[in-house]
Amino acid sequence: MKVCIGLSGGVDSSVAALLLKRAGYDVFALFMQNWHDTEGTLHGECEWEEDRFVAEMVARKIGIPFYFVDLSEEYRKRVVDYMFDEYSKGRTPNPDVLCNREIKFDAFMKCAARLGAEYVATGHYCRKDEIQGADGMPVYRLLAGLDPDKDQSYFLCQLSQSQLSRALFPIGDLKKPEVRRIAAEADLPSADKKDSQGICFVGKVDLPVFLQQKLKPAEGDVVEVFDAYFHDNAHYRFLEQTLGGLRKDGADTPVEMVTSYISETRSLKVNDAVHERTVMGDPSREGGCSGDGPFDRCKLSGLSDETLRLLSEPVSYDIQFETETYRSGRKHVRKTRYKDNPYGRIIGKHDGAQFYTIGQRKGLNIGGHKDSIFVIATDIQSNTIYVGEGHTHKGLSRSCVRILQEDLHWIREDLCMQEGEIRRYRVRIRYRQPLQDATLIMRRNGLFILFDEPQRGVSPGQFAVWYDNDEMIGSGVI
Image (cartoon, one colour):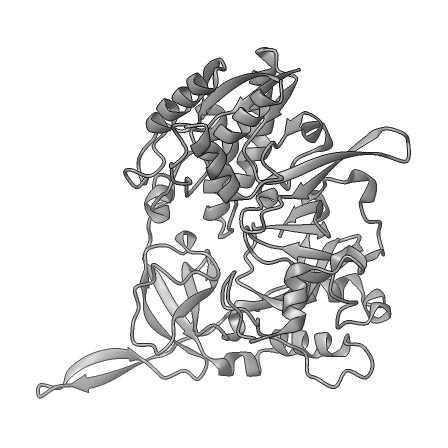
C-alpha cells in the first residue's frame, strides 16, 4: 500500500513517517509550502526554508523519497482570504481548521494521489477507526488522541467521511514523550526540534501587523462596561430569568451566569468533583457527560425557536456618552470632558476593532486597574471595543450559542440530529479547552448548544465541536 506522509520537518510527522516505514508501507514524503509573505511573521519562528531542510534530512535518514509542492496560491485563496474576511466582520476564525479541510486533506491529498498515494498520513495526535453502518457500508470514526495534553482532533473537525477514508494518523496512540523517545532512538534530525506555533504554515505572527496587510487601522474608543449595565439591561435580565426557569424542578440554587474557569487549565472552583467529571467525562452517561445537566428536558422541548434564538444572542452594548465644558487652570481655559456615566466610561483608544477578539487580554495597553481587563465585545460598525475588568466580569460569559443549519458539519453523517431532537454531548469551542457538558437542541433555525456552565470568551466565527466520549460527532461555526 502506497502512503504519502505530509512531512513538515517537525518531530510528530517525522515519527509518523518512521512508524509507517517500519510497518512495511510503501512510503514517500511530501513537503508543502503554503506561504511566501513574511510580513507580520516573527523572525525565527517556523520558517519554512528551515522546515523543508529538516524534512528532507528526515526523509533521507528514514530512506523514503522526498517531494516538494507549492500550494501557496490555494492556501491564500481558501484559508488566508477567508481569515481576512472573517476578521473584517468582527469574527474570530480558526485558520488551522480550514487548512486541514481545504489544504491538507483536499489540495494536498489530490497532489499525493497524482503521485500514486492511496492514503495520506499526518502527524496529528488523533485516531481513526472503521465500523459497519446500518446499510452495510463502512463508517469512519474520528477519535481523540490518547495523549490528553496533545489531542488535536479539534483541528480536524471539518473532515468528511471521504477524507477520513483515505487518512492515517500513525501517532494517535502515543503520548508526546514517547514520540520524542522514538525520534531520539532513531537519531532523527527533528528529534529535538521545538513544536511549531502560530497560524498553520504561516508561523507565529504579530496578528495585528499580519492583518494590516489588508485591513486598515482606524482609531476608535475602548469602553469599559460597569456591572450596573447588566443590572439594568433588558436582554441580560431575560437571559437570567429564562435560564433560571429552565432549571429542573426543585433546584435550590440560582442559575450560574458567570464562568467558573479562568483559563484552559485553571478554574475558580477548588476541588470541584463535578468540574473534574466534566473534564474527564463519564462513559456511563449519554455522550460521556457527567449527568443529565441542570436543565429540564421537557422545558427545553417547550421553548419556541424564537426564545432559543434570543437565548443564544450575546448582550449588546449601547452606552451613550455626553460631554460637558468646564474651565481649568488659572486662566480658566475652556475644556471638554465626558460626563460620568453609571454604565461605563471611555478608558483609551485602539487601532481598529477588527484586530481584537472576545476574551483577549493582551495588546490593550491600558493600566489603572486592579485586575486584568478583557475584551467582552467589538462593534465593527462604530469601531468600538468594549472591555470588562476581572475574570468574573459578566460580559465574559455566555451559556448558549447557535449554529446555523448551513454551518453544521456532521462527521458521523449517520448520527445527525433531526428537528426537535435533544441530546447530551461534550463540547469544546477552542483547541485545548477541557470538554464541557452541554445539551444540544436541534431546531429549524439552527442547532443550539446550551452549556451546563457558562463559557468564557465565546466569539462568532469559532468552531464548536461535540464528542460522544472520545469520538468526534460533528462541528459547526458559532
